[in-house]
Length: 416
Ligand SMILES: NC(=O)c1ccc[n+]([C@@H]2O[C@H](COP(=O)([O-])OP(=O)(O)OC[C@H]3O[C@@H](n4cnc5c(N)ncnc54)[C@H](O)[C@@H]3O)[C@@H](O)[C@H]2O)c1
Image (cartoon, rainbow, N blue to C red; front, side, top):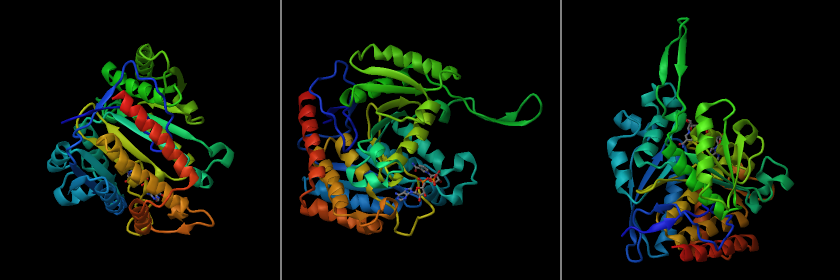
């Protein structure tokens, strides 16, 4: 039986609880969850570079946390990206998309690498990722970025600026310039070669992502910033017009607008933006948090399985060296449990285990600072597993985060 789930603040750590129930709740349908059905089909897409390394670690953590809550997973691993190109000649084989569509949730590592960089566009790993997102119809990409207290020293910002940073970028994922037509190569009136793309949004595409963003902002600080380039681009002028129209449904949320060039300098709170600006801004946000290796993401549609993936790429520079930080993928697995399957307890086991592992001083190279223990991808995974398994008490900081979660669960039960 499918159960509906409110879209709540998806940041895995920072939750601003509220007791008010939305007037216009936007509901995300979970593909399969009920109190008795405890077996889920998960499609794993390890992909390329560090993808297989982080997926193998995250799979173990997911399995253990779920089994401790009486949940069983049937995993199906499918080729995707460069790995699929080598195996089948296309970056997203039909069987991979079909398996993903039939499953309850999809966990992706990363795709891409030098080997395929010179391929024609339709034979690039990245094309497969766009096809996957479009095929699963996951139009809302939620990218939380918060500075964990344990990692405040790893941020590129001064401690006093980084402390407490808690962002949410709500990125439109299946429209805009990445998909717009016409696109291609040609010749201009002077006979010169040109390349061109089209930034295009229909009203329904903006309306649905705006509603998700307003709902998200409502659960956070009640503030939403819509980022566009409405001083230059017609598509952005239209974006702004629709966001303002949808704002009437959310009088309790304070809406502001900002041009993307300005937003790049002052990221804050909840942001809603188009595909390309969201891509750039969320990568920028990751630097504030210390490392791109820490940030999970969830991509959701109105029905069907969600797609959960770290925001980082395949990191070919460190692939195969056991240097990757697996925490972004592990946290993506937690988002899969919570927002894909509605298995909140198992998700929290993972979140708590990650916090506990950081409390115990374990760090991969990207988040290492003096006085901590430098570990590789596998060892980091083993330490997280120990924390999931032994339920080692978490530090005061971790417990504070979890208390916020408990408030959130109460809210969610009220809202359902
Ligand atoms: N969603 C995806 O699968 C995705 C996203 C972005 C880039 N890519 C692809 O990945 C390839 C490399 O792209 P890039 O170098 O621009 O971005 P990247 O995210 O792969 O790497 C950027 C930098 O961050 C480091 N890094 C990334 N993830 C890390 C982790 N988990 N732990 C430690 N360090 C980590 C890398 O070593 C590198 O120095 C390209 O082919 C690109 O197209 C894929």
